[in-house]
Length: 604
Image (cartoon, rainbow, N blue to C red; front, side, top):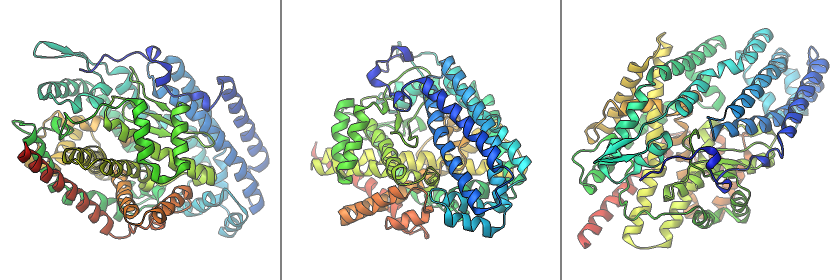
């Protein structure tokens, strides 16, 4: 049974991350913010109106580089404190104050891009020759020339940055601060409920009555906030559409993919091929779950249950370290040392408390370590999640150490490759440790239910739904709660067919993800995992040479586009071959799970 969540103040310190690794004291953070103000004043006094020579451009860009380094540290220090406790008014107030100051500072330095883009291409190209850490930033200015607005307009947009981020803030406040859940009852027994309790516990609950009741109660609470959530989302999408129009993009898709250095072809291919080709495999997996668990029908609330829940071992935080170190040992001693540092120096916030962000993420402020948020539930799924987030940490330790801060802004299309790669390496390691059929089936089912379901189904459905919303906005429409639920329901029904019952409660899934406030992000999970699957297969076949290439890719940061990074790792994403092979690979795993299940049942 899930336990009632503690308040943040009741959580043991060892389960929390240590933000003093960014700043030893809040005073030092405020000192750096004053330094930011001095840098901006110097840039205005020295370079405003004078960015007409390559030398001045390079010198000004070096100041902008330093400003971004400090802003990254300050912004992470204040926002990470908020993410673990949305009930803490002091941290919310501090973060809002810092963001307000940032809006002013970046409004004042918006002249940099605006003035550079007005120069002849020859001036910018010469500056690129002279520059060191800012070469690619300048290349991007040159690339974005057709979409740059006038200096005054760019300054106004920068000043409104905090306001333009309001839809996401409203969504998070609604979800994590205002939405409070009542207990629910099953067979006379009362169970506590909360956002993270549902997503981290009840979705995996083996007791069908409890699991389905939790889903019903959870959905009932979501429905009470559907209109405000829809309003926030409609505002976000409208903002993106208006921005795309103002900057002269053909549509919002081109605008959002421009940042990722990705074509519409790659974007659409990812959604269309997986929806068509993966669906039959996943429907078979759903039917297997229904048969194993003797369910009257397969519902959306049943999709995350384990193939063999009795076999799923309980794993402590300390035990997880052994699994992860051994599972990722193929990446070398330096990678193992980073894992030791993460546990020793409290990079990870394991706590389960009220007001904490749901899901998991990894923040890696330039010049520091990483900060990983998750909620530990003593499941092997948590080990895979932590390995996933450590993949982000390893990626940014490599590229932060090798590149300018401007060359660590890796395309979203690639960003999930290092994280999902770690999940696959963990699974392959576990399979090699034990030849038992039941153990093998359990590991393979972890790959499907954790790694591939999460990235190739959950997030892919979000992407397919999101694409339909943008199409409506492109046609001059708007969206509301009823319409969003209908789009999500049709998206899920299209994928699952008659294998899974999709109820009106399942349709509310659109309310659960913050990814919709991050541009076209949801589809990138499957894109990253496609690359990771192909690289992992290469590592299995070639060993150290493939590992060496992968580590070079991690250090490359954003010096290459997604196609270039994949090519460096030995993967061609210019055609659909890699994606189709990955889908076949997933189908093969499901085939083996079905076969092993028959053999295990026959041996009973």
